[in-house]
Length: 225
Ligand SMILES: Nc1ncnc2c1ncn2[C@@H]1O[C@H](COP(=O)(O)OP(=O)(O)O)[C@@H](O)[C@H]1O
Ligand SMILES: O=c1ccn([C@@H]2O[C@H](COP(=O)(O)OP(=O)(O)O)[C@@H](O)[C@H]2O)c(=O)[nH]1
Image (cartoon, rainbow, N blue to C red; front, top):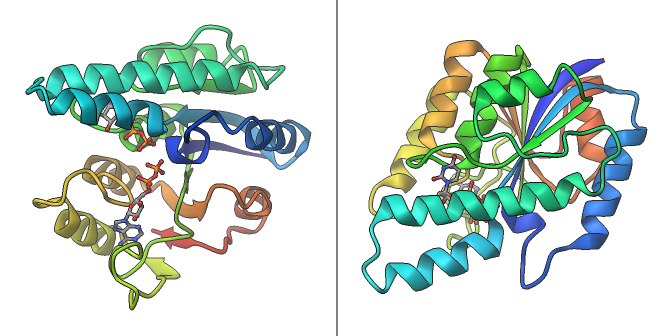
């Protein structure tokens, strides 16, 4: 049984409404699988965060407040997710250390964001580092990392395996002037690199990929190592 941390992209649970069906299927699969040891789940903000952030940005609200708003959205989504798990924390921790402490009491530790200036991908990488987990699953709305953003470039090709440095270079290219629309934020990739945490970028709705990663080290998405 392996410890893993999952960065659960907000986009796959929070659209116009919460995707309750997915949340039930995901939590059942995680609780019933014997493949997983301790699991950290870091939930993103999804549409809830994006709506608030884009509306308030138009009023000139500064970025740290927008980040705080985003963090609150991630914590709401995380709290919503706890209601589908039996063996998990009841309160949402606000720091990595608090989450690490909780993880000694629960099989599943669920949290959202921590501080302004990064995304839940970085929180997930830090939690993996703190728990000594060597696997980070980035469960997102695209089915892997592509040579370019597949939503805007129809010729983009999916990448099976890539090095940390290749992922950092690609994320950096997208971070410049392109807003936050990257497959993973740069800091999360640097943290994974320094601690040798293997990253699996998958379509988070493909439930069969989660156990396959832990049991066979493979997935239908992209492996960064
Ligand atoms: N090279 C790339 N490969 C894959 N996705 C990319 C790439 N560059 C940018 N993206 C974008 O990154 C986004 C990541 O998913 P996102 O919708 O932000 O979900 P979440 O953060 O909830 O997982 C996608 O919308 C995708 O269009
Ligand atoms: O530790 C954190 C986590 C999130 N955020 C803010 O909350 C937003 C939503 O989080 P995230 O991007 O991780 O959500 P997702 O893309 O998965 O919906 C981010 O864009 C940031 O503005 C933050 O400032 N610090």
